[in-house]
Image (cartoon, rainbow, N blue to C red; front, side, top):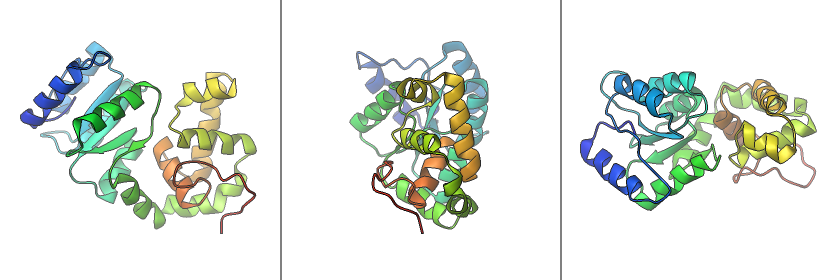
Length: 223
């Protein structure tokens, strides 16, 4: 957990450690101390504040993901602006939580991350991201290039919308991890995006997926 508000950090640490299936292996208030903590403990999930002294949480997310690509970073924010959320998604954030979320909601999201769910947006975060995607270049690219996605890539995109990572997608489709990663890379390239989360946002905006992240079953063509 990377959170500089000591009262919140302490309360979250107590709530997490009280769970029989969860353990808070470290808590700190700066990115500079978070990076060696992540290296020492190899956590499954990092709860990351955006506004931190020194290096901010967006750059911190990027650095931690660069060193530990399997770590799932959940952004804690009281300031869910489009620019911040899109920047965090581009840095590799797997989800977003409002700082005033209830402890049960936070614990549920942590468990979803551990269970291979990679895309979790709570509160107004999804709406904010979609509003940003509405006018973004990546959204226009998505509308232009949706027809270039193969049927298998559309299937992979839907699984991404369910929140599955590459390993879980490989298991679902009974393919190798290398093949699943290749499909994800092609989907992101064709939609003109830089992260799986951004790919799902663009897919929802361009009607490749519905608001639940599910591909419509009836024949359709986005307009």
